[in-house]
Image 1 (cartoon, rainbow, N blue to C red):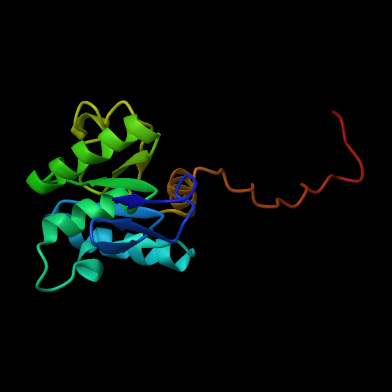
Image 2 (cartoon, helix red, strand yellow):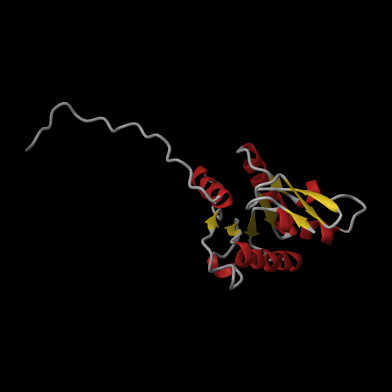
Length: 173
């Protein structure tokens, strides 16, 4: 049983006998990339996003696989982190599930290239067809804004830019 009003419109979704909080993004990652992912998670939360991160959401004493499945179902988007270690075995399962939801209900699946990733060539075939966010040289404000755009599905407003000063007189030679 799954009760969700609108397209990801409720805060909670009833799945089976448990109640699952809705998240804007689930972070899928290889455990070897955890330090970089934890830092990125903090930045996303600082920007006001609700982020599903396994260490903070998995309940002790409950089978983690079923909780992970519920979290994938309840997340509006999935950010797939790929670093120098590639996609881990459980992460591969998460990617498969995320891509299934992408086809079924147009859920956003965002490949994120972390430091050490060999570029788009390091992405699994079905993930490489999606527009990725490149954090391979570190997290810049522009790259973070692109990731947030992918998570929310809405392009952020362009920052206000002061007009360039114009010279009061032009000299020609």
